[in-house]
Amino acid sequence: MPRFLSLGLIAFACALPSLAQDLLVVTEVSTDDVTIEDEDAIVRLPANGEVRSRRDRERLQADKLKLGGGLLASFDTNEDGVVSRADLSAGIESAFADADANGDGELTALEQQAWARSLPTRDNSLANPVRFDPNLDRRVSFEEFSAVISDLWNDYRDDGDDVLKVSALKAPEEKKNRFPNLLDGELTSRAGSTIPQFRR
Image (tube, rainbow, N blue to C red; front, side, top):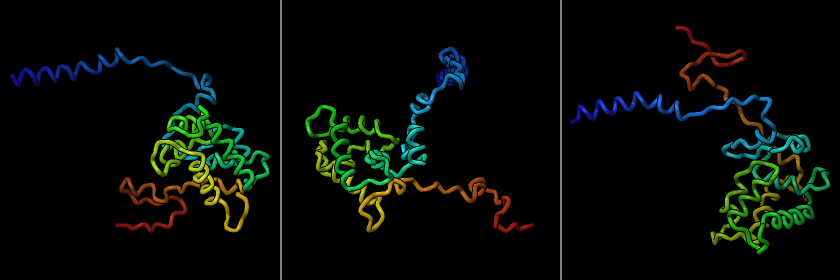
């Protein structure tokens, strides 16, 4: 019996690729057919502050912003490059009203996630229901919402400043791997490298 079972499994394993080939349908897509909206629909994990639209990238002069930066930058409605306390207060009220889809004065997790998808950046931190709900009652009040965004505003502004400069919301440049061959087990030098070469 075990021999029969082994032969059956081997036969099935050999037949599996041809079965999969019959089930798999691949359609060719030309790069001319892909629009910016299609590219924006691609899921990028984790969502780490990438600016969605070309217009916003040009206005903010950045491809990526710090977490929550897209929301704070949207509060600069007069585009003077700063978010004042008045801009912050008005922005928080407007953002909460936008997020509160059913108008009951509280945000549910689904409302919060839908709202976060509408922001100018891809930002999972604002879509996370726990971020705005410190008491974990599954409802976000205006006060909880306001406290989180005000804390972000305070964290990102320079010490002593009464305003947040939009330029301070740019994400820092990602550090490039200084030793790309190290993981491959090689220690070859690149042009301009300071790694000494040892000869055997």
